[in-house]
Image (cartoon, rainbow, N blue to C red; front, top):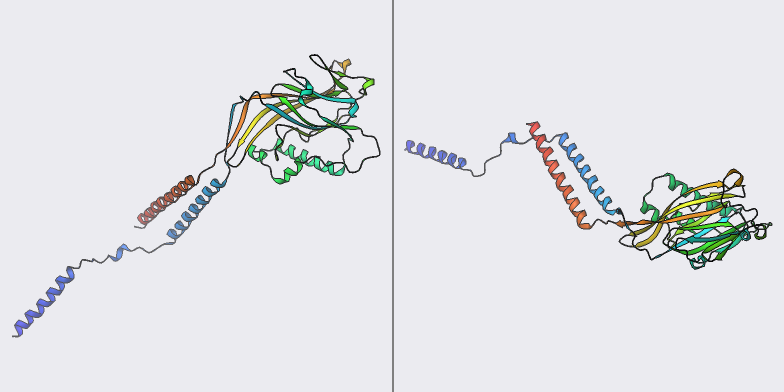
Length: 351
């Protein structure tokens, strides 16, 4: 009897061992676990910061304005070209005259008429501040880099300068010694010459002549001048033109000032607005008229303009939301790939 019980006891133990060996959930070996290290934590933080920076950069790039600049032939030959003028000359209005001629030979009266107002060459304190700010701003634009879109949409700080120069409230006790010539003309899109010269102009068949001499008050004419406005096209808020704020002073009575202007039609197309305007580049020369020294010609202020055959087109290239989502998704996917690669290399080095 004891022998049989002993055999039964051993059989139970053997059966229990067999069941344990048949366990379908094998235990994970302890050596597989690796303790976390500071290097892994630092690596994770750096990659996270880098990823956040990339995503923010993509969003900022999406919010920015992007423009495409290109030149195309200007085929709009029959359209007219408005010119806006506001110039003060240091001579009496009776002694000078302003007119314009172009290659079409059109009667200058058909271009329109400019107004002339007697004024004083010396400006008031408010006028000096206004004109001085305009000169400083234009000098900055000539010397520093600027983008075309930044010029076309100036901040409100500069838009205040675009208002007409303040009217003189207090008049000096002396007689006016200067003439303000201002207004707008409608030009043909051809080569032309706007000029301010001594005497008055008289229309004759085939053109016009200038009547000068002591009988017309032009025996001593000073052509010191300042340009408050000189632009082409419809006046647009915030646009700057190179000659605005120009100032030339001289004590000579026979000086010729010549400005050579290249006018370029400019179309600006954005998603919210479309502007058709003109911009121009200008250079100038001046010389004293002295026939005894061989320097011939007529003193005055000459603006010789030419219309460029090419048109400048600026188009806003807006990035869509779909492209932004793709960019962010690609960035996140690349970060996961980079992180997994670094993590695998780190585990391999630990082993």
